[in-house]
Image: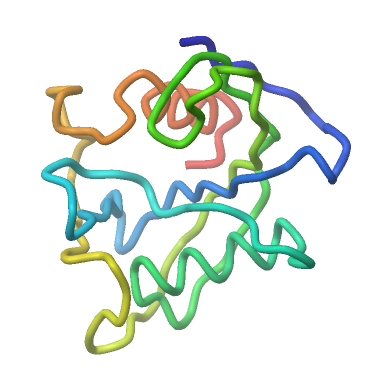
Length: 146
């Protein structure tokens, strides 16, 4: 699995939005109802949707965030087979950083639980995408955006 970072890629290539979010200084992770692992908020871009709107929608749907700031970090790509890319061909996404200020009282999505962690999970087996998510976080840290 290879993760690459770019300043820009053509908009039509961006299929995913992933958001590294914090709330009151804690990392925000989601637990999907069908998985036993944690993941950063994010997901697929819908037809006709801007990548920024996809990021906002996914953050709201997966965490219940009502009030937040959102800044772009960079474009990225993943080469290699994974749960969302069975072909293994290079797929592109946009990485964002968010600071969440307020949440809805309850979730209305496929997410079972939102977790607030002081530190990133030390055991990579706890992550849904253990070969991808840590690299995204490290890149955002390198750019001083989280």
